Length: 339
Image (cartoon, rainbow, N blue to C red; front, side):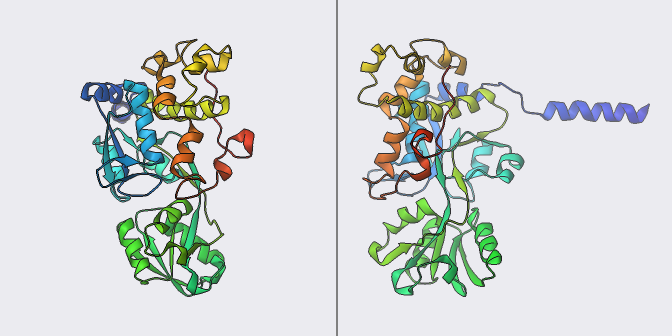
């Protein structure tokens, strides 16, 4: 009998410790505070970087803006908190930020053991290598015996180990705490190659003294689905954050842009009417106004617009849409419908 009572009591304690589904604390906190606290990269061109006046820009920054637009109807109500790779998850779990939008890879370990939820994939990436042209290397398979610059606290460490082990190649790790330290070390030729997500390599290449002297090798050695992250235990906030991304993808698919969204309020297309809050109460079900998606598109843009201005072919990074194109255009970006 005593053992049964002990087991029963322990079970009650365990249940008490479980996150409460549907608790809207984060949305309430953001509204009360009047600003969204958004964790971003300290400086990664195309994704999140401040200019000399402290104005932030990039795909991840635009996602923060989109969440603020959905909540407040104002995309400027964001406080950007620059975070390193090693501190980002602890800061999110502590409640110091409401949302992490910092080129972060969705993995099984992070999704199951850290008390966090990934709210979608805003950029499908993969790890690559950058080398100096003078090295004479045209393939990652030629990197045996070289020194590789790596940032600790990221998925790149294990990916590199797996790749070189699989291909029976030896290499030397030159590891650093911050991304800036990695780039500086590579620029000073303390290593032969620099490895990171391919999108980051294109961004960091722009910072080098002579970008044309460096090349990103063709091999992609991993899957790096990057997306926003929230704490577990707040289903309403989780749903809101993921539907911000879905709304932007759906808007691109339906041809709704920043320039035409106001005119398309008169559209007879039922999908557009639902997206813009003219039919249904989808915003209210998320805990926000029904014109939430209209505000996102008007103030920030659809997914394609955000991609193009930050990292696309006409941007300084010059990255092709590739697998980040819509599913209907040869890519894998796909969103559930608003209905």
